[in-house]
Amino acid sequence: MLMILMLTPLKKYLSWSLAVLAGLGTSPALSAETTFTLATPRGATIEVISDKPKGAGQFPVVILASGTSYDARQPLQLELAKQLQQQGFAVLRFNWAYQVAAKGGQPSADRQAEIEDMQTVLHYARQQSC
Image (cartoon, rainbow, N blue to C red):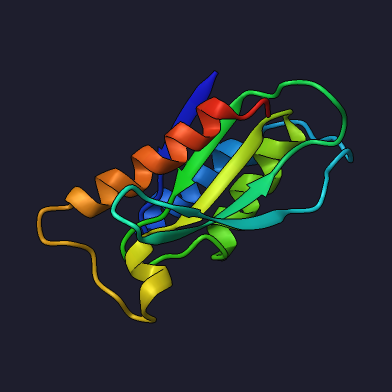
């Protein structure tokens, strides 16, 4: 199973998301995050942070894609990843290529580069036995 969650910096969505996650039960079996990079077909680099539950086996995967002004290490992304991981999900958080290339970078005008970034992470997730 693969889920994609796009995050927005709007506070009303933040409080709603955290309220939903607060209702989930918790489990202490968390592993440390792993950070790595992937190259897109156009040659750009995206940074990926992987959070998996401890233990062997395949886990359902959730991809967290940040909004324009967020990155994968923002508190919202970190808390969502932790809560999902506690529920048995593997989580892939990533920074868009424009965020990796330059601090304060901007997305492409037509968003085609960001679509390719997402497709790169999706391809990676499908190839892995999370």
